[in-house]
Length: 579
Image (cartoon, rainbow, N blue to C red; front, side, top):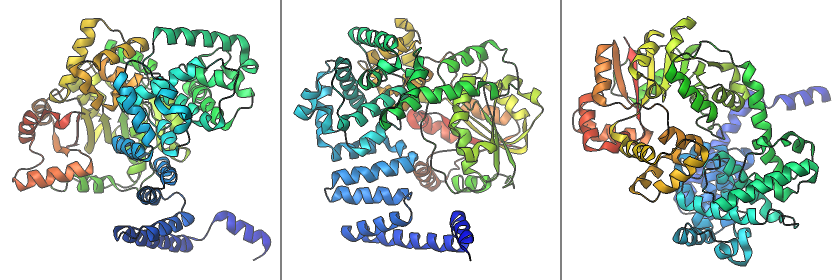
């Protein structure tokens, strides 16, 4: 083999047999590390996990387990680094937000103390020195896990939100300081700016703050990109998205630190890319229905949901296999396809379900439709390049869907029908484009599970709150002083678009299990089962299987929900099959 051939071989990577052998070796190392950990041999386990990561740096489980060992050994900074790495590699872990926060406080005792101090005196905002002593924000600024968490998802904890609200104010008060932000603090300030953009500036703001931000905005626009200090720029990004500035594009022509440049990517480059994509989205149907137009307007203003990271790619499985594993006792006719599965994602929003579906199911290709062009552009911009050929995004109204002349093997309508004037009519239309034997996944709001949401909507109407960002912010603070603070159980409570969707939606319908059962009986549908996360699904199989009743018995599920109304507090998620 000559030099040119060797270079070509290296570029192509090792042959398949070598890759398989490498994977087996990594697998053996990981098993040995886990066994050492279970045996309490932490030093051996740490050494083996590090060997795994030498061979496979993106091994998320090894990062997470190594972080756990280092935490047990009292090596907080190193543990934080590996926990952060696991979070970046496996964003699904963000679903365990409370557990992550508990770990973070254990690693950063000064953060836990500051959370308690600030919670005790709210709405008074404490200063950095009151919260962290002479070290100020530097006491927590370098923690890898904290930075990763802040840049990955909206804060989902009120105490944490209030602490960051106070720190933001401290930074605003120093916006015009001629001193440079210390390098040790800059990453934290930029991470906080990215957090504020992610949650769409949901943090409480006083009138005095708003006036300061207005003055800072005028200062920046008058100075232009060349005259703005890094401190001024990143401080404004804590309160307003930078892309709204008249001179926004000019900031991209100037050299900044990597942390600030990441803020510019999030707040200027990515929104610009979404605007560029608007002409690339085909319009399949008109949107003429009055309710559809109102819903479209809401989501043009507030694309839903806003998310940051695509979930980690998983091993693809046939849809039939997934349903057998999720519903082992349910009788359904296998689709019998593992290639070229035509899926419709109805009401795809910002693309999470479409992306997750083509990642998960073998051979899935999706047409993802939505009323909102803004949501579709967010979805298309965020779709990984390797999945782009398997998802077609298009603007369409479900009410006009029959006009496109297509039918589908699988339809996902998880979270769209309850925003229609007549959800059951929308369901009928979707059934008309589902092929015989086709499968449908639905998500519908539960009447019993959303009693506090209904009460909050009445609270909002009584006090005359509108749905502007300012009114949403004020309303949230008022709700937190009432028994309706229970709404913090919804992650949607913690960002502007999602809070608007949760509490201020222009159209919301709720269902009951008897109404779902009646529709299924009226139409040629087979109920396959309610979908839960794996631990809950196994718990219900064990609990109800031992009682001798089928998990497809909707009458019994209605009895359970009547007794435990929070069981479907999010919504009903279930699968049906067309006869």
